[in-house]
Image (cartoon, rainbow, N blue to C red; front, side, top):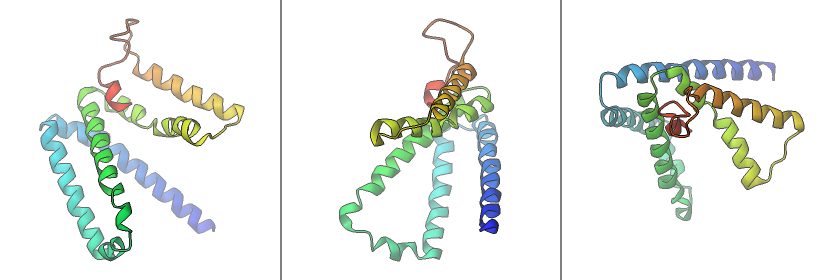
Length: 162
């Protein structure tokens, strides 16, 4: 049990470091090439890598066990992922500071929580509720442009992240 926990923390730290590099290196790449070219290259590389993993791990055989009535979920998730990745990298391209995109992009636990409250009727303790408001307040402060006008309250590109 203890070894599994340590391994889990190791992978979590490794994933966090790898994902942090995504913000920096994608911003550097987007300074050199256009967003559509970047997205095409990234999605193509991801497709090839996933295809190899499916082939090596025997994923195509496992895919045949999924009932055909459930196959609609694959294109649905694919379209959702394309939208998510496209808007994420559009925000990296639009916001000058990758750290701001990183902070705002890591609000997904907050939005997952809010969606869980709305759709799954989840309930939270008072201290968890305070935490939700603290995170949301931090996001507002991070994305504040310095102007009080509604049109320029947030820095450019914030809507793409959120």
